[in-house]
Image (cartoon, rainbow, N blue to C red; front, side, top):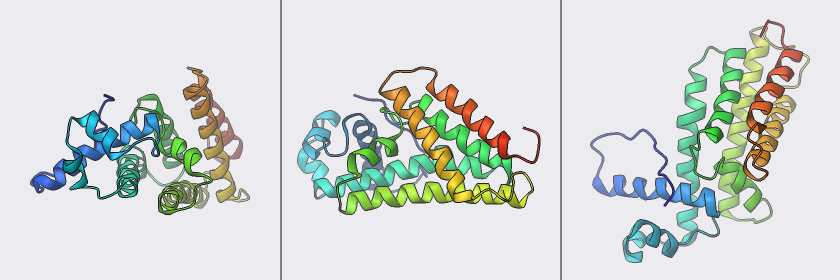
Length: 211
């Protein structure tokens, strides 16, 4: 069984909520390895040594399970990447922290199969429906967070104001996604290190401060 991704939980919550969250932590890791479509309630029940009826009490259908998994993955990503980065000062420190934590969460196997949303994006890019919509919303929020950080950096005088922040965010995203592909599929161990250096060089080319 893959390792269970850990997130910060609040004490004193009802047992049913804690059980559901523990199930979803395991499900996120399994889905990151086998795909959302490949993960059924029966498969998850076998992995967790639970009854199907026990899981049906938490998730009434495969789609309900998939949507809950996307929601949990989104929360884990916020906890491990976005929230710590937003604690950094607005400007270039925040931009760099967002990029670094994004690559680090792949290196550290926060999700057993690498970046959950990169894999899910490829899996559902041509499959319309609620699950695809949930993945799109998560990706749009991530790009919006990166874009805002770049805009804040421009306001702070750290990045050239002539740069189109939304386009630059997509450029950074594309570099990181390509590195994830090389790291996971081609087993290029230096892919993420190379991506860090490439992103830093790109930031330096647009910076108005020393990096």
